[in-house]
Length: 573
Image (cartoon, rainbow, N blue to C red; front, side):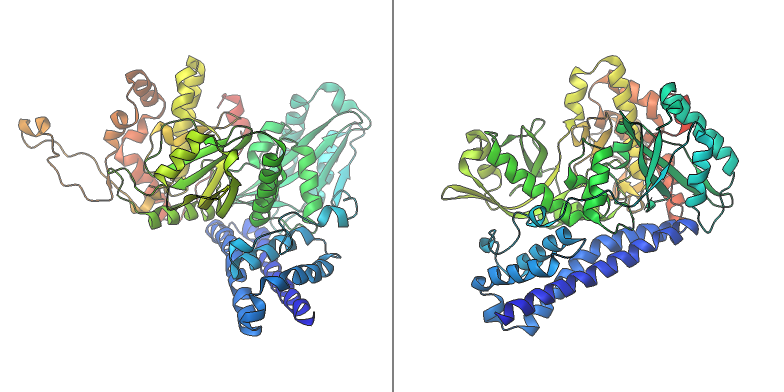
């Protein structure tokens, strides 16, 4: 059918336009790093995220204008469009992303009731059509016992328009770190190879050389973070071979990398080899292809439900005042739905909650806020829900969740990585674990503030502990930009009677926050309150927050590193 082929071609042309825009933004990352344009880097990261929906909307509008509505919206034609589209994308190197793009266009035009594998790519067609992927283009370095020489080759190949500040000093430092982190026999193995992917990965104020280090029998991830200290030039900050630390660098709590990736599937396959614990959905997302990460997540969810007896249950922890949260015990994700009625203490409305969750997508999450994926019209069999879970969901969110025959329909929800709520973690933590968790809880608040984010509701129940022991914020209905908050000291009482009054003796505006109130607000347990005051007592002072606001307003982008720096390791930080 000629019309089907023309529609398929128009969809693909829109995809090419999107990919060109994506590349233009990504390709500018090196210049932004070299020129220390940190605020521009943040704007570029947000613009690249927004670009997808902008281009989808533009293509959908173009299709509506070019093709008669009766044909374009006739669901019977879409299997033909899909077949024509498959033929068009077969020769491409980004074909899996092209499938996700097609799905986005379909969902923007037609009702979700029309979703099935005949009309769109619920399941991918790519594995059956693609040749066995090879490794992405890499650069290999064989030391032959001379680690310093191999490192020198690496820095000769990865040069910038800005010189290295102290290359010889960096080489000595990196060699010492490698020798201290690896068994002695590895450094002497004649087959030892350092392998780095060609593209440099950029994010925030850092650039990363990423690859692996291997012998015939073993391999380790290899990451060399580079920093550009203004007035000093480029420096290598450290070298990382620990899988857990590299996993944190690629965490779901961080902004997406800028990287010139020619063949996404091959690049992700390489990352999967060095980070086998990461799901490919998270790896696609980490390099900016968050919509395809969403596709891979959904397929993994369908496969899990089809292949297990797992049922949805309510997530452990204190019930939320704005969101209801449920989970699958065998699937490391929580599903968050906005309640129909909020707790009386909450002053936000549904629209504000949605806007704040979407805000988190585009800001620098600095490793302290969980990434989210927004979904519409999930449909799952009734039997996949524990009865008490389904009853609670229907009670608190009947406008969003309903039973339609044998299916439960969820009209709108967010997904997040599942974590252990901090308040529950502390209930069974040892004294050492408690101290470490409270230290990291304070660091989470401080690093969010450095990124111009004020969590609002900082109660322990709104933070989680990841599998790597990091504390992460995940409840976004009260977040705001730090610079929008008015931090104040509580004025001294005018009369002795003021201190006995149940009402404050001073005026309080909607955006006023009094850090002196944090200790009693955050900690019912006096022992935890004292320990936190010892670790992060500066958070209880208005001057601390005001100083951060002044730095942010002055245009400073504060350093927050996604790995332990050598000086931190030396002090056990």
